[in-house]
Image (spheres, rainbow, N blue to C red):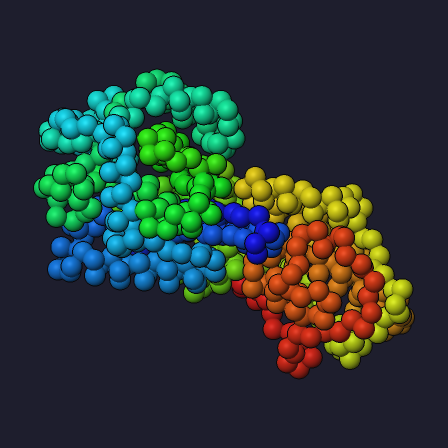
Length: 524
């Protein structure tokens, strides 16, 4: 793939003090769609994920369980990856910040920034939230009624010697950078927040802790460990060889996009590029701050933030085991706008599953396979000039494909899926209901054959468009017929640019009793 364009993307790394919930999974799914789409379109992709392990919370959790912190982190990393694999997240690397490769790279990075004159020793005193592992401003605490706005607990006043990163020196350079690269922060609402934050005046940042046994020692003063953000953000470069494999690092950096939660945009859009400037490397090309997933209380109808204290945490495996990974992927990508917020409820999940997946997609596939298998012995013998008809009444297929591509590239995944359903699947189902091939085949087999060719062509189009979203379902549909292109090679343009002539079209799906296994069995 020497000539292929490269695409390097990351997600936020997660605290392993508890298993991932549906909000955590939402980020990974959004990133996965982008990675799969880029691969489908011919990019050489590197997709990084990982866990943020060098934290006080992790050390405390391990101590509570009477475990060594590293052993605890390794086990949690295994559990996280088990969930991501179950959700079909196609990451290429999973970095643990307790790994040697990360720690070595961190030490080299902080030494470089120190040598460049951007780190100095001082004393820090302020209001500290242990849950956030960060100091809070007096204003933040006052506006939240004397508690941390995120954890709702009073902070403690803390004073300690520390090392500072001179972030304030980069304020003007950051503002020039934002102006030169207006698309660096996405979506636009996040950009406005960060601009206001930086224009309000940047403070130097405490980047060290003292008295901690768990963490990465600072190379120029080992009695201190590196503070979590100056450590965690560096996973994006240590995973691709910073400080160990310069050629590999140059191949992949800068990252094309960091996918993160909207609550940590200022760290990624101000602190992180300032750190890059200080170390003499390019900042990433784009940071995308996605929204949150909330849970709807089925009894009260109130939408709530996911919280252990409220007892409303939903783990991905709860949904996967009850429905399927593909159903999970569809719901959150369709119902929760990636740039904004969405909500989950079991009832809404079932309604969307039955309407969109069981009816419009699964039922169409099953009908088409069954009619061809039963009435044509699984073989639609077609003349070389036979061509599927055009069934669309409003938007042609080429336009739809380009719309879907545009939505995916802008991370508007819900709009991409809406276009596929409203502009392809709904008209196709309406066409089938209007033509009634299950009846027509009894009176005019040739006419019914043309209808079936039309429907199979729509299934081919849908399977290609759904490849980044529902990888297993899309592959099952595509491999259900002997389409000439290999599944591995299809791209979005093939939906409309390839020859539509049908010759020797056959059903290749596995059948039982003349029927195919249901893609999405309806929920009673």
